Image 1 (cartoon, rainbow, N blue to C red):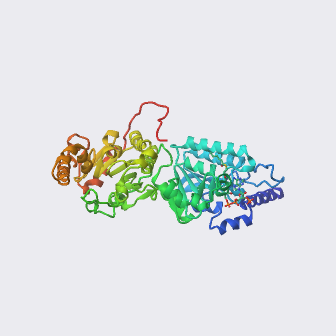
Image 2: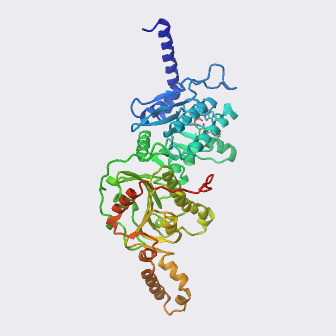
Image 3: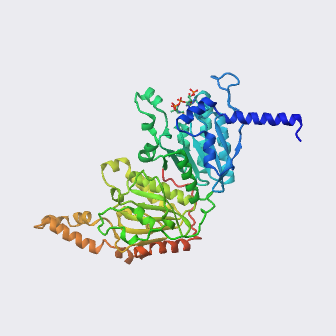
Length: 516
Ligand code: HXC
C-alpha cells in the first residue's frame, strides 16, 4: 500500500507526465490539427506496434534563453524520444513537436535526439526520426548549432551500420533537412512535408525572391525534382504504413540479413511477351520484375525521380533482393546524371545491409549531350561503376535486350565483379547501337556510295547480325549463359542459393573516395 507521501509523489509524476504530453499547449495543438497534421505523440502511436512505446527523457528541461521569462521553459523540450517495435522488431524513434517553438532544436532537444541515436547504434537497431522543425533554435544561438553538429556526427557514425529512416512531416528547415539528407531513406507526405535549407521568409529577405513553401520544397518537389526524398505518401497514415513495409525488406543492422519468408511463385508469368523485339520500342520493365518476384510484389524506391532507372525491393525465393533496372519506357532507359545517382545510392544501401542485387539491363548507354556533360555526367556516371565494383553482396545480372558501351559495363557486368550474368536470346551486346556504329566505321563508304541511305541500312543489318547479339559476348566468356526469358527466375534463385555464403576480402583502406 502506498503511503500518503507515496500517493502524492505518484500524483506529482502523473501531473508532470500530463504536462509533458500537453506539448506546446492546446491552442498550438489545435493549429497543428487544423493543418491536417497528427500530433507528435499520435505519429509515434501510428508508427509503432500497439502499446510498444517506451519514452525516455520526458522531463528534460528546456534551457531558458535570453528571450524567455523564468519558468517559461517547456518540459521535454519539443521532442519525444524512445524505443518500441515495428513488425515485432525493436526500433529507436524520435518525433519533433512543432507545437513547441516550431519543433526548433535547442541544446536539450538536441541532447535527447543524440541520446536516442546513441542507443540505436549501441543496440544495433534502426533509427526513425520524425522531423517537424524550423531547424536550429535561433534564441539558443551557437548551442543549437552545436546540437546539430552532434546529430550530423552521429548520423555519419551510424551510416551503413543501422538503417536510418527520416520521416519529414512539416515545414523542415536547416538542420532539420540536413540530418535527413545524411540518412538512408526520406519519407514525405503531400501538402504536409516541406524541406528547404531556409524558408520563404528568409529567401525573401536575403534574395528578394518570392515563392511559396510548397513550391520551394513541397513533397512533390522533393520526390520529382530534387530527388531528396525516396517515398511519397498522400497521408501520414499511408506514410507510416510505407515505413513499416520498408522495414520488412531490410535487416536490423549490417551484421544481419533481412528476414527470409517462405518462397512463393510470382502471380505474373508472361515474361516472354513483355519485351518487344524491336530494340527501339519501349516497355515497362516493372512488368518483367513482376514476373520474377515472389507474389509479383515490388516495393519501388524513388519511383518519381529519374524514372529512366527503376530501383526497389522484392523477394525472390523468400529472400529480400534489391532490384536495379533500366526503364525503356522513359528516355529509353539511359543512364544520366540523376539516374546514375539513384542507382549508385541504392546499390550502396543494398551492399551495406547484405541485400543481394539483381540488375536488369536494357539501355543504349550513358546519355550524351551538352546539358549532361556540363551537369557532370562523367562524375555522376562514375558513381555507378564504383558502387557496383565496391559491392560484395551477391550480384546477378540479366541482359534483357540492349547493353551498349559504357552502359553494358556499368550495369553490373562480370568485369565489375558480378557473380552471374545472363542474357536473353534477343540481347544486343556491343560497343554501340548499329546506326551509330556504321556512321562511324563505314562513313567513307556510305558517303561514296550512290545510295547512302540504302548502304547505311545494309551496313547496319550486317553489323547487327555480326555484333548485336549475345553470342559474341558468350563466345568470349563475358556472360555466363544465354537463357530463355522463362528461365530467368530459376537462374536467379539458383545463383542466390549458391551465393548464400559468398565472401570477398577487399584490400585494406581507410575508406574509398566515391560516391560523393
Ligand atoms: C526558433 C522558431 C524557428 C527557429 C520556427 N520557430 N522556426 N523558433 N527557431 N528556427 C517558431 C516561430 O517563431 C513560431 O513561434 C513557431 O515556431 C511556428 O513558426 P511559424 O513561422 O509561425 O510557422 P510557419 O509559418 O509554418 O513557418 C515554419 C517555418 C518558418 C518555414 C519553419 O518558421 C521558418 O522559416 N523558420 C526559420 C527556418 C530557418 O531558416 N531555419 C534555419 C535555422 S539554421 P510562435 O511562438 O510564434 O508560435 C539551421 C542550421 C543548421 O538549422 C546547420 C545546417 C548545416
